[in-house]
Image (cartoon, rainbow, N blue to C red):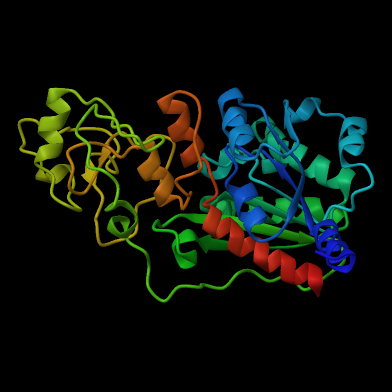
Length: 343
C-alpha cells in the first residue's frame, strides 16, 4: 500500500460522522450507527450488566458507566474534546405519560421524566448537529398530543428544529412489529426526513429462528445465549395445548389462566412478524417447541447477529434485548441522518 492510499484510508477514518449514545443499554443503536459508518465518541449507561454486555461487543468504545445526572458539563466537554459531534442518540426512559392525562401534571414537570431532561441537557452542552430520541409510540398521542408538543418546544428553545414520526421496525427487515416514536432534531434547519420502508414483505418469526438447534425445557446449546428456560410441569402442560399462533383460549378450561395480561400464554405465529419483544417474554412460547424463547432467539427477533453476546443473568439478558432499538431499524435511521449530514 503506497503513501497516497494510506492517506486516503486515514482521511476516510477521520472523516467518519460522529455519534454519542446516551442510555446505550446493550448497544442496539450503537450497532446500527456503526454499521452505517459512524464513529463513536462515547456512550453512557448506568446498569452494570448492560455495561458489561456493551463493553464485550464494543471493546474500543469509550463507555461511561455513570448516572447521567451526575455527569458534569466539564466531564462531558473533556470526553468530547475537539470533536464536532454530528449526532447524539438515545432512548431516555420516560414514565410520566403512562397514566392517561397524568392527573393534570405536565410532562416536563413530572419528576419521573428527569432522564428526558438529562438527555436534553447533554444535547444543549454538546450542541450536536443532529439528535435522535426514541421512545414508546404512545408518547406521540399522550395527553392529546400535548406531551409530544412539549418535548418539541423544549428543544426549539435550545435552537433545534424538530420533527417526530412513529416508525415500525418490521418496515426495515426486523421480524417484529415494534412501533416507536422517533424525534429528530437539527441545529441548522436542515430539512428533516425519516427512513422509508425498505422491504416489500415482512420477515417472519420462522425465517429468523428455524435454523437454531431445537431445545427442550432447561436444555442448553453451544450457541451463545441459546439456553432454554426451565419450565414447571404445570406450565409445560398449559403451553402444550396452544398451537402455532394460538392463545390461552386453546388451553382447556380447567387449567386455563383466568386473569392476567391477555398478551401472555400465546405462541408466536411462525409465518408472521413477532409481537413486540419486551423485557419479559417468559409466557410467550415458541411456535413449535414447548418452551419460551431463548435470549438468542429473542435477540434474533430484534435483528442482533449471533456474534453479539449478552452478559449477566438470564433475566437481565432478556431486559437488555427487550429494551433495545433493533439494530436494523437503527441502521436505517443512521443512514438517513448520514444523508442529512451530507446535504
